[in-house]
Structures are given as structure tokens and as C-alpha cells.
Image 1 (spheres, rainbow, N blue to C red):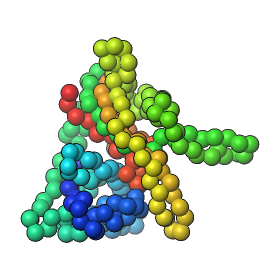
Image 2: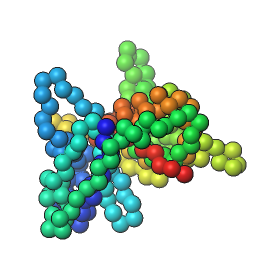
Image 3: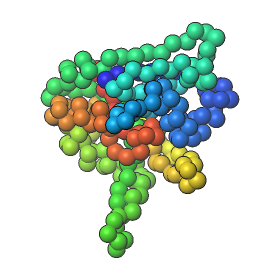
Length: 216
């Protein structure tokens, strides 16, 4: 498993065009890997992080990526720009129950609304309270709990919220994207590792679902 990061230049016209659509961003990320052979699959998770003036694509995959095309089209190719690749399995193996970590997750908080049919209609959670409740409701099945603040409140917050709309095969797709940051406590290391490698929630192909940890 690999966790990789490549910086893009948000002032380039090509980058602005690519980042207007989750579909185009998905295509750019997937072009970093060779085509799959018959029966091959790979869960590629990614998100866009804005750290100060810098914009990064963070990509988790079972195969090592080659971001040459992203540097050429969206980065600073004349500066001999590279990218960062971390072999991730060692880090994942060191996760243990009881540990506390800073976390970051961009997700698509949704719920099903039943209107009489056999299948519920998937609708986004729209308020901050609903979106926070969505994450807290999923935490136990993902092997963690939100650590408490000194005042006893869950120690996490929403740092970004936006709606992304894009065309996919002639249909308009709308995704509500929310980025959470805070502190979690590991309750089941195996469940947490599975959540990190498989992704959390829906819209994983379009920049949602990637949970990352950092030391306190």
C-alpha cells in the first residue's frame, strides 16, 4: 500500500479546468497507474488538500503511482518537480487500540429517505450538526471514537464544506463534500485499518472517503 502526494499549480489554466470537475480529477488520478489486466482491481482513494497557499493531491493505492503526467500538465515541469511516495503498510501495522491520532477525512455524508418505495432516496446531510452526527454514527463500525476535549465535547470540527456538480456520461452529478479534522481514539485496530484502506462513505471515486492519521 502506498500513500502519495503531488502538488499542482492552481494558477495554470489547465489546472483550473481540471479542478472544475470531480470527473476530470478522477481521470487525472487514475492516469497515474497502468491499465488493469483481466480480473485486476485496485481501490484508489484520493482527496485534494489545501495547505496554506499550496494545493496537493493525496492518493492512496496498492500500486505505486507515476505522477509525471500531472507534473507536466498541472504542476511545474520546468523545475524538475517530483512527488512524495510513502510505503504505507508499515504505518498501518503500527496502529493499535487505545492510541490517539489527529485525523483528516473528506467525506460525502448522506442518508436514505424512504418515500414509500422499496428503495430509499439518497439525500445529503446539509447542516453542520447532521454532518457531524453522520461521522459520529459511523465511528464505532470504523474502529474508532472521537476523542473528547477537556470540556467533554467531541474534539473534531468541519474545516471545509462545498457542493460539487459535474457531468458524468450526460447526467448531472451532485456531491456534498465535507472535510473533518480532529482527534480520534482507536477502539479496534483491524476495523480502522479496513476503513482506511477501503474508504469511508460514498463517492470514493470522486475525492471522498480517504481517512488519514497524524501524530498528536
